[in-house]
Image 1 (tube, rainbow, N blue to C red):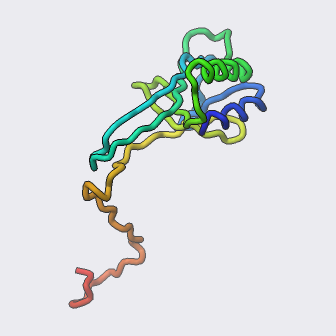
Image 2 (image 1 turned 45 degrees about the horizontal axis):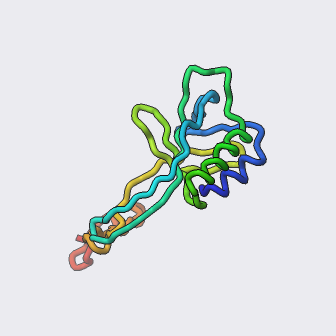
Image 3 (image 1 turned 60 degrees about the vertical axis):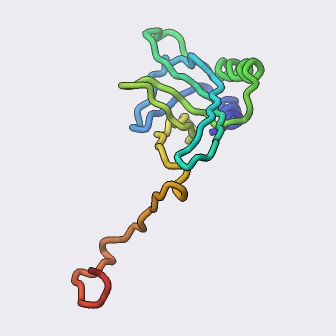
Length: 152
């Protein structure tokens, strides 16, 4: 989800909820403790120089059960961050503490913001020799192998 998308969704909400990948909600007394600009410059395993810029939201829960972050307050924090940090319309990455600090992509299902598990990948598969083997449906495989058929 990009910054413009979360701003659009927040404008139509009365309350904010973040749903974890397991379906549980982040406790409603969470705070957005940081909005940051994350610039990453790196070389992939194929030797290609790459750059990416994202926006980081850090969610935190404390024992402060009496305060809830309302959509208009988060919009205000975002607008201030846009000015001070010179944010673009970049993808948002959410940090949330579980057993360790988890990083999630963000989506919206019409009611809740969804924290989506991230996964690593090789960005230079064609250069480092990673070859995806085609997946086969086991039901379509023959159960016997005749000589000369090429299945053995």
